[in-house]
Image (cartoon, rainbow, N blue to C red; front, side, top):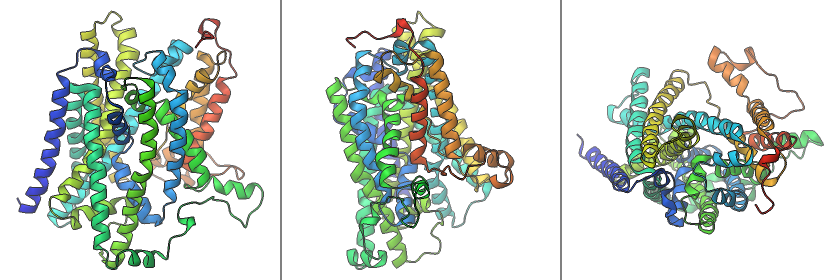
Length: 534
């Protein structure tokens, strides 16, 4: 083995040993489902904060955010982070207290108390299915590093079959390693490994930023000159076309991904869904000793997003400048692969291993979050009420651990299928449908006392999904995958001229309005009306 490769491999191996060691240590203290799912509510707020940051940062973010900076050469993506701060303040004062008051393990238990079992079952089932598919589908992104590393070592691009094997092998390795510490240590292992992973991720990003800056001849002057200067429009955009008037002017605003309106409105709705009504994120907040410290960890994690996103976007802009001054014909055409290419070909030995560890850290952090939340939701919402209603604490603990194993295996299947689809059909875009819309029946329960019931909530959830699917172009995306033909040759749905083709920040916003509007049209059953003191 090449000496340089040996050093990088040693650094990466040391990271894996550290993570697995933490999982083994935490696993010795698990005595009940309460310990496994909530850590006994004894986790420090600052560790919860780091876990939230790690959970919401996937390998797609590690590559995708620098890719946005590289492709756009501006900071307009940062506008979406503004809404996440506002949303977390709202979540901390609207959602967290009811969850603590009802002493829930799975947040869908709140829906049982407020509306009934049918609403809880529907929301829990949708969460399990969609989180399994979404988290598994994102896993293949982390395999980009191994695919490019293999190409660098071999000196030639691998064939399609080899590439599929590399991606599938990487997905299996990531899932197995993550499943070990998640199964043994529960939420405590997840949070403390998240803390380590967040530190590695941020530290490695800062190192890359410093190395990039120092490698650009002329420094800041060169960056500004090649960029053409930095202006307010590089950060704040409205999406409004001054040449148009009336609805045509406002329609264009919804068709631009990154605007101040998308950040303050669309991103707020998205974050309220992901951080207020999704088990995988809320479960972290419920491990804090009390409501006050839970709120603190959530709000400060939003403030931490600003410098983190700023760092990754700056990496992308500096990457563009670096390759302008150091031309390289082998640089990948896909912006999302550029940062990984730089890590493998330009980073010093040792630090390269640390950066690759950072890639795996982001993938494992978000994966452990999903697996733990899936196992907890299944055990609390399905195993205890239906499979084994008389389960003891030990039986529930054993069940949640086995659920972790089975969900890990399903993740491998989904990740492998996604890798095959992306590699064999590279022109097919995997639409990032955000299915947090199903959680918005929570708002009906928290904002009203006498509105919403099982039937109305299910109707509202189905309608909300249909709205999000139409706005996101899901029908035509499915047609492309199934037929392999362009959507224009086999359209399942034609967008009316007056309706904008909305970008992703707006999907959940309008889906939420529809879901909430339908849910409040139905009256709560008398026995489900909360007392006045609630």
